[in-house]
Structure formats: structure tokens, C-alpha cells
Image 1: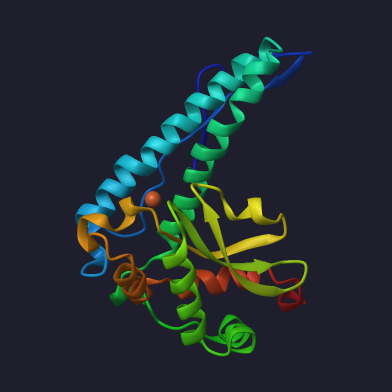
Image 2: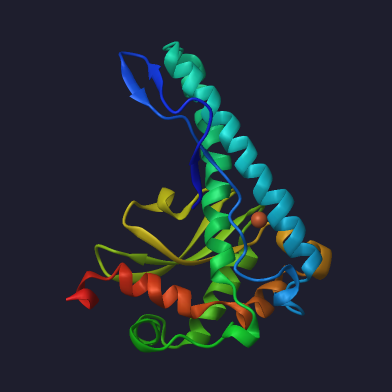
Length: 228
Ligand SMILES: [Fe+2]
């Protein structure tokens, strides 16, 4: 994810530690806003990227600046108070940065089933790709309020699982060994303008633009046994 140094390159903080004040910026989408139509409209993609994702980043940067200031003053109450804003907005930035890469236009391979090692692992652990999709859709539909549904790889046990997280909690909050192969945004802002209240149709259709190639690359990178 994009990272740049802003303002003074380094600041003297607390007990003489010197560190840079860092901020995050909106990553470009790897496709045009209209490229996922008719599955996800250009209007949703543009708002989702330019407004929602940007707002998480702006608020994340603001909270990090406040944290930097609070650290320099050894202001513990403020340091602790900022944790929830950092988790929510930083999580929003992490999750959306993954989400854009999880999607691909149909003409560029979106929706093409996973092959090789990931395809085999899904068949072995879920029975079939269809079974996995049904499980993801059922868990996504059952998620109350806002959140995400994930296909996770437990890097230590080399096991796949379907997980959900509430709000903008990133997958790592469910376990430090979990790597996200894909995450589906099931906040209303991800589908409401097009699918209205029918979340099930959004979940059913999104498989047509899932970028399994990206998921396979993450799977292979995070699987030590495949690298030997
Ligand atoms: Fe979102």
C-alpha cells in the first residue's frame, strides 16, 4: 500500500527516538470504474473508491498525526483513546486495498476458477468451488450489520477457512497466522445503489468478477511447502 513521508522527515519523540511521520494515500484501481459492469456499476466503484476508501485514509492519517503528537507529550489517555480510530480507519484502508485487487473485469479473467494448488486445496477442503461459494455467500448473508467475509489461509496449519469480521476489522484480528486470499465487502455502500436491499444477489454475482489469479498468487506466496 502507498506510503509516503510528509512534513518534517523525522521528529524527535519521547525519549529521544527519532522517527518519520508517515501518511497513507489512495492506491489507484487496477481497472476503470466501469470495468466491472454489469456486476458492479461504475457509480458504486467510483464512490466506493474516491469517497469511502479516501475517507478511511484521511481519518487514519489524522489519527496517526494525533498519535504522533500524543506520543511526543507522553499523553497516555489520548494514546489509548486513539486506538479505536486507528483500528477502524486503518482497517478500512487495509481491507479496501485488498478488495480492489480481489476483483477483475471479466475480459481480464475475472471469475475464472482457480487452478493449480489453490484449486486443489479448495476441492480438498470444501468439496468443490461451488461448495466454497455457497459457504461464503451464506456467511456473508448472515453477517449482521457491516463487515467482511473472507477466504483465509492459516499459514501455520496450511488450512483454508471462511471467516467474517465486523465493521472494518481486518482479517488479522481473527488470528495472526491468517492471510486473506480474498475479502468481500458486505457493507451496504458496496452494493446498495445497484442491488438495493438484496445482498444475496450482490453476493451471487460478485463471483463473476473475483480475481482468482490474485488469490492463487497469495496462496502460493504464503504456503511454505509450495516454495520448497
Ligand atoms: Fe467498502
